[in-house]
Length: 545
Image (cartoon, rainbow, N blue to C red; front, top):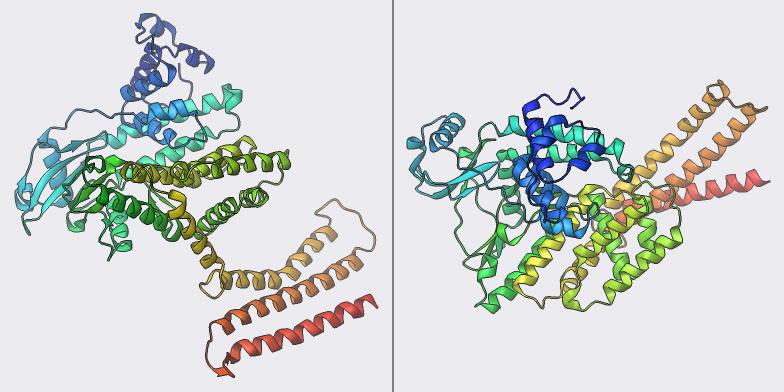
């Protein structure tokens, strides 16, 4: 049946096949060249009247935690699957039986090295929440009397997930080979992304660090935070945090003023997280938010996203170009940033981007969505074989969900009026040489490039001269000298330019000592770069003579 040595659990494999056949996916198995033999003849087909998206959801729910997480991850990729599947996968429920309290207590005591009687003044045996990966119990810390929530990872869940991931990897490789329409998708890499996501969610120490990091970011902000973590009572399998008891956002209907306030709080906080911090909660739906005394608490930090500074700058540049209706700039940024050497029809892509921008601009303020716009751009780029890194999709979806939560609180909120000015401000802050170190590092890169250029050109020509490339050319030594001379001039030009930019940075920062109100170091840099510029011009003119 399975010919891959990666699948070691045949029993689990048969269980998966049985569920797939029962929901009418025999044709899929046939296309994957899986011989189900007598297995398919003894299975009663069910739910024949269901749509395919509904059947997919039910299959994933029956297959358990790994496949539910797979479905949830796929639902975060609107660039990969149609909307009707996304809407259905967002309904995935991980209804699982509650673990025996003896098992939970044993895990806690093994992890924390003390009995629950020593750790807690009170420990509720009935969980207040239970999911496919963990369950949560209410407790009172024995040492301080504080009310806490203790999240405990289910036993043996890691082994089950590893088995399922091996099977999923086999399916991904088989689908990649047998379905032409999937050739452009790296399905094994998607399964590997799923593995990384689940393993991060299973690491409660990591989740605790995420929560602590967000609390630090929002220190002094009395409108939004996350539960406090008790690191002394936290390990990879046990997470102890402040028990937060409050209202769901959809239960605030009577308090219109508070809803309007919290809608703005959510958008502002998310804008800061994404564009300034580069660290964000990846799934900020209403179920992960509580309101306590007018303050938002973000819960469940197992799934987060991070953006490097270059990623943030790229996102800001694209959004500024969109807000300025510059479709050519959007296309140029996408092609340059994602390593695409050419697009079949760049003008057609620019036209399609312009249509997206015009459609966005044509909406009323209450219906504009930055997150949806970014998702539409990512989907369009994929149609032109421009593959966007998953983090951009993740942040686009997170923004869309955060916008949706804000609109649930205050339907009339103008998302662009909140996010747009912040985006432009942060963009100009990032590219302003006087305000941060971004351009200082760029200058350093230019100097390094100039320093290495002659050596690299020399090595290349030595390889050519040594016959490592099959190239015949008479007078190669003369060519080498000419190119080396040109590269030296280029190096001098780069260093001169770098000195001018660097001197400008120093002068604008008013670094002491000062001469006539200007930095002496900056003035000296200008003078030295002027001398180098004169030498460069002289050499160029002499070369022409």
